[in-house]
Amino acid sequence: MKLFHVSDVHFGAEDPDALAWFEACVADERPDAVIMTGDLTMRAKRSEFDDGGNWLRSLGVPVTIEVGNHDLPYYWDPLRRIFAPYKRYGAAERMIEQPLDLPGISIIPFKTTARAQWRLNWSKGYVSDGALSRALELVAKAPKGNLIFIAGHHPLIETGTRGTARTRKGQQALDALADAGAHAVLSGHVHDPFDVPYRRGDWTVRLIGAGTLSKRVRESPPAFNEIRIDGDRFETLARTMSSQPKHAISATSDSGLPG
Image (cartoon, rainbow, N blue to C red; front, side, top):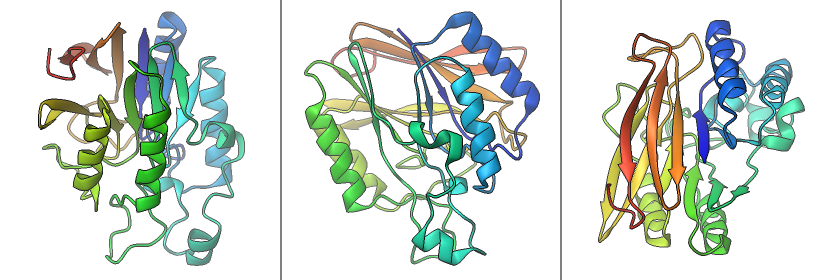
């Protein structure tokens, strides 16, 4: 099986060439699903959600979308941000935070955004007790033996990228998800791909981050991840619009330990 993990498309600041490249990859390779880990939009406008949702639906494969910090109304619209932050999803609505159950794989949504925080930079990550409880409930309900992929926007801990998430309660959430048997936590936000192991006891969960298909690139060119799955094993490949279009960055075994 094959999953495409894409993030931070930022409709409103999207890169048309990168979108066309991704569309061609989907059409040629037909992944089993696309996981979009947040920041579908730039300013959470209905038109941006409509454009992004219609684009994702046009791919013709199952899609789930997580909410990113750019998918909430900006600070200068505080009433809507606090009281009605999710009212402009438009064409994207039916894909927002939808669990996906594929043969042998459970993809579980995990919210890492907050309407308000006790710090100035509300773009950074935050894990609420309710969000963690919901994710753990879905993990517990997943078919026994499935690979468990958690999909959120912010990396739960820092992974060495130039961009940062500084996710509050992220460390505790990662430990709880590892204890529950999660195999990988997929995210975006930092606009550069990564795949790093996090070991807890005798279990290893992988932190996998996708790049961006927007004009807001950082260290890497426009990129997405390809996750190849063979039974209980999976590997991650970074796909970039560059002279090195595809390279493996990890592999895992069925025990949850690095392969």
